[in-house]
Structure formats: structure tokens, C-alpha cells
Length: 256
Image 1 (cartoon, rainbow, N blue to C red):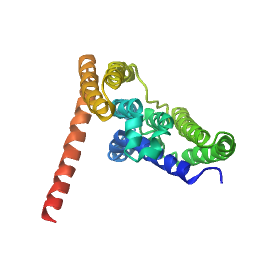
Image 2: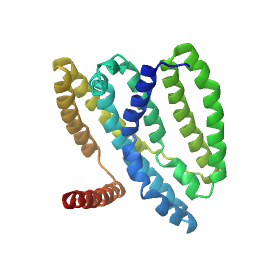
Image 3: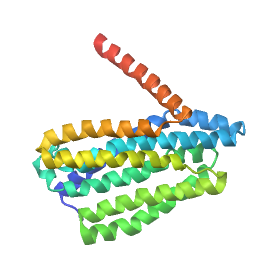
């Protein structure tokens, strides 16, 4: 065995917390497939490219907002799972970075499938499986849990990079525009506010205050930088769709 039971539990918790950062991409992925497939079938390549740009930017906005407090207040986050996990808090940024890289290019895997390139996606997945087998075992043997986290980060980063390269090669689509820099710029004051709160306040209070004020600063900078009309429409659709779903769920719980 390469890992102890505790280390295995820490890895599971890290994957769980890191996966929460992925929620914006999961939300976008609920409606991208039919739209992308229709645009591809009708030959609207430019519209498909715009869809990819807009959705990947919105994903980046959400992922950055979720990633920053988790990384800055990693000790408080790990403390939620018990005192044993706190000592492993320095590894949590690795899990978050892995998911950040996995989300940075938006719905790239779905676009490969919706443009009828399932075989290329299968080749990428096979290559990543082999890459993981070659890297994960020696890294884990040599560095233990830290090595496994590093291999996890490498796997998701390389996988996403390969998918982006393949999609660009076969369809000429790529996710990034200059507007992708806006959430990165807005993230800077968020980070500064979060760090200042951590330095000035104890534990949970720092996490609550730093996250709330930091999110407000993040939103203010994004608003000042501006959103495109397409981005505003997409956000409105998401709010309407998930608001309606939440309302139905609440009514069902009330009737139970």
C-alpha cells in the first residue's frame, strides 16, 4: 500500500472540496450539448465559436470566485472535516488548482463529442490513462500523498491541454479571448481582501468576513470592467433555469 488510511481519507476530502470549484462548469454543461450540436449540424461555426468563448468566460468567473476563499482559508475548510485534516491543509491548493485547470477551457470535452470527434476524445483519454499510470505510481512511492496530489494536478492539467489542442486542430475552436483576463484582474482585490481578513481576524470570522467582502470587491471590479450582451443573456438564462429548478425542489420538499 502506498498510502495510509488517513492519507486516503485526506485525498478523498481534497477531491470532494476541489470538485465544488467545478460547479460553474457543471451548471454550464447542462445546456451546452444541445445548443452546440444544433449549431454544428447547421454549419454555424462562428456562432459555435462565440458560444464557446462566452460560456468559458462565465465558467472562469465562477471558478475563480469559488477557488480563492478555499485556497486562502484552507485550514478552516479542512477543519470542517475534523482536526486530523487540518495538518494536510497545505495540499488543498493542489486539488483546487487541478480543478481550476480542468475548468479553464470550459466545455471542451462536450464540444469534441458534439462535433462528432468522439474517437479523438477516446484517444486523449487513453493517453491520459497511460500518463497517469506512468507518473502516479512513482510519484506516490517517492512523495506519498503529496506525490499523488501532484499526479492528480498533472493529469487534469495535461488532459485539458490535450483536449484544447485537439479541438483546435479538428475544428479550429479555442476558448480564450482577451476578455478572459477580466476575472483574473478582478481576482486580485479579492485575494488581497481575503488575505487581509485572515491576518486581522481569527479562524471562521476571517473566512466569513473575507469571503463576503472579497466577493463584493470581485463583483464590483467585474461590473466596472463590464460584461458583454451575450454574457448577460447567458447569466439570465442560468438564473432563470436554476431558479425554477430550485423552486420546484422547494415545493416538493414542502409537500413531503
